[in-house]
Length: 190
Ligand SMILES: C[S@@+](CC[C@H](N)C(=O)[O-])C[C@H]1O[C@@H](n2cnc3c(N)ncnc32)[C@H](O)[C@@H]1O
Image (cartoon, rainbow, N blue to C red; front, side, top):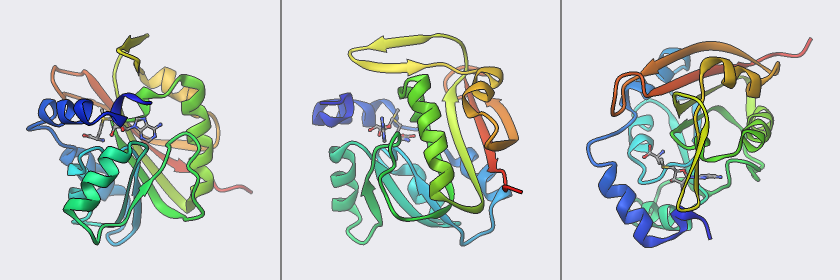
């Protein structure tokens, strides 16, 4: 059972994340993606960013935690929400963009590489990714929950050649420059 599969841990996360959301990241995505495009959010958690994304795009939410998925479906019965693991992305659907906010840092570096590769198959032509991470080096384990830190350089190593890095930036979530985001464009094959 994963950390976020527990009702208690989900409630704790919701309380801890009070007052935080990804509105600045959504604004950055909107600078790179036409309004009305289809966007898949990975690891939506409580779904605050999904609501913000929905102000610009046709959104599909997802999470590997049934607790988060069921919680959102109960609140918004008409919402398009999938139970989906960000590593394997077992879906036949395709999207113009894939977004996540502080999700992929829970994957091992190898799982992140696998996820990024698989995301290229789930993206439409000219599709883009926007993902955020904790900025730094090293890895921690807290009660079975992995946190992997990234710099621009270490992210580029994992991302490989399949994407062009359109934008990389650092920002403040809790402390100055504790976070970073990257916008990637799938390269077209010649
Ligand atoms: C730190 S929370 C962030 C939640 C939300 N994005 C936010 O900004 O509040 C991490 C989220 O990633 C989800 N998650 C962790 N591992 C995942 C995986 N392999 N696939 C999909 N979601 C995952 C968790 O269930 C949780 O919702």
